[in-house]
Length: 447
Image (cartoon, rainbow, N blue to C red; front, side, top):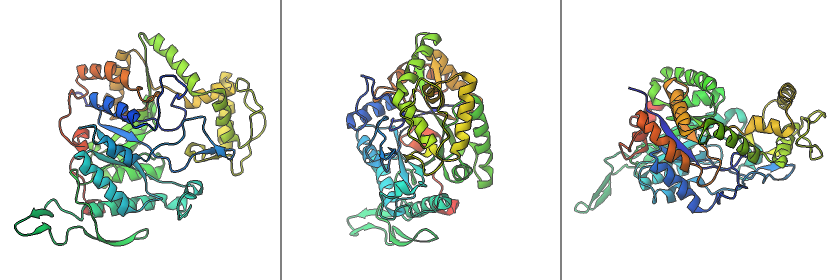
């Protein structure tokens, strides 16, 4: 029997994936946009709907970077509202473990799990920069080396809070005049990052614990996912890279007593459909140009060069000036960390080898479509990834909001169902059911 594919939808937030200048694009803030995309995903029987978070507006040269869409609502609030207008779709919220506290996050996630009937998921992310920390009382208080140790303890503490209620603690016995069992919600956690005790206010949700998602790709992130996550949101969207990442992460599970099927690997991907493969390729090229405007291309290079490059022609060669490797001019964009001098060398080599202009280079390195072709071509390609251990499924990030998944739902999903590799209907009420996961592991089992 062929392996079953898992599919999820990512509501476009920031980055130049979103073509907000397209006349078909709607608001990324209006609730109607969230409803449209979520209902499309649910109609297509997707596993879950995913929201990222943004804790500070990004900046370039000291000003708000608004060449991409900027500004978005808080994810748990949006998903709580979506719980009322969907019935089966999983609802995945990104919530930061660096600038929050376990009690509040655990309470809000348990509440979403109750409101949605067992469809909540938590994408656990960390933050490394003082720039984001300036928005918070503690500022950039956490040393970068500690962000995963805090994240691991944060998650473990949340699990202890969820486990502080058992399924037998809600009595609601009018005759006895007793609503909850004595001792319900009692907890005590004494650790390096958190030292708290008391009573947890929210009873255990239908899933016990929300589904845990992780998105880091570093060595620490991969280990965190192997130990703690149910889903890993990867960026390895080519067949070769996907297989290497899949093999690496799955091989780490055994030392934590976990099986391969306990962790689903879902790369973030895009798609473009056409009446023929050639037609789709032409559309994909047009979308790439729309995703990288001349101004976007210059801004993209400025973030790495650390200099004002506004005097350069975006359709001309790369700057001949050397990068300023000081503090940099871009704030809040994780992809511009690391060795910027090495990145400049790589880009110059790539541009020289292929004869790329500044804009061509930005298109080559940022605006890619993963699956391009007819609906049949795309369905076959998706299936190939899953059947050959490059992924367990995909998180689709459409380039249009909110109608960007309409074509996928209408034309590709039926073909996957016809092949017998994707469900025709949901088989259970909870997100754990959709993903084929067992019961949530308790805090004691994960300690």
